Amino acid sequence: MSEEKREGFSKLYTRKGDGGITCQYNGIRTPKSALKVEAVGNLDAAQSYIGVVLSTLPDSLSSLRTPLLKLEHQFYRLQCDVAAGKEIIGKEDTKGLERAIDKYMSHVEPIHDFILPTGCPTAAKLHFARTLVRKAERSCVASNQMGSEPIREEDMAFINRLSDLLFAMARFANKKEGVKEIIAKEEE
Image (cartoon, rainbow, N blue to C red; front, side):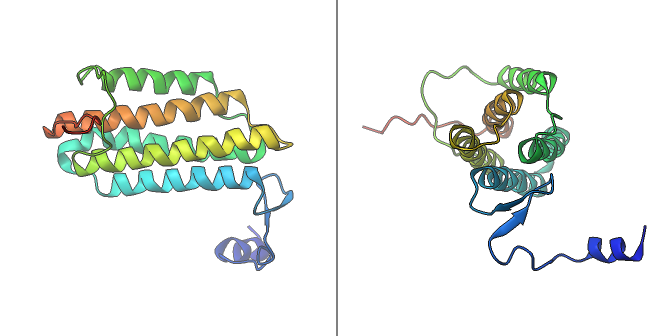
C-alpha cells in the first residue's frame, strides 16, 4: 500500500464534506440532503443501534448474539446496495430473514392485538431498532418515489422483513426472560 493511501485511510476527516456535499460509494458527489443519502444514513442509524443491543445483551439471551452479528454484516451489505446499486442482497437473504422470523415466532404465543414496545431491556431495544428500520424503509420508499436512482426490489423486501425479524426477536427475548407482553389496548 502506498504511503498516500495509508495516510488517507487513517484520516477521519477530508474537509470535502464541509459544504454539505458527500461522496457516495460509487464516487458521485451528492448533496447530503439527497433522499438516497438520507436513506443510507437511516440504515446506518439502525445498524448502529443493533450494535447497542449486542453490546448490552445479557448472558441469558446469548442465543441472539450470532444472529444479531449476522444482521450487522447484512446491514453493511445492504447499505452498499442502496448507496451504489451493488446488487449484493438477494432473494435468498430475504428468505433467510423469513426463516428466522418463523423460528422466533414459533417460540411465542400468537398475538391478536397490538403490543406495547416494551418488556425486558433487550426487547425494548429490539423494538427501538425495529422503529429505526421502519424509518429507514420510509426513507427508501421516498427515495424511490422522488429520486432518480431507484432502490432495488430485493433491498426493499429485505428491509421490510428486517423490521419483522426485530419484532420477532423482541417477542422471543420477552418470552425467554419471562416478561409478559402488554396489549396496547388502554386500561379501563
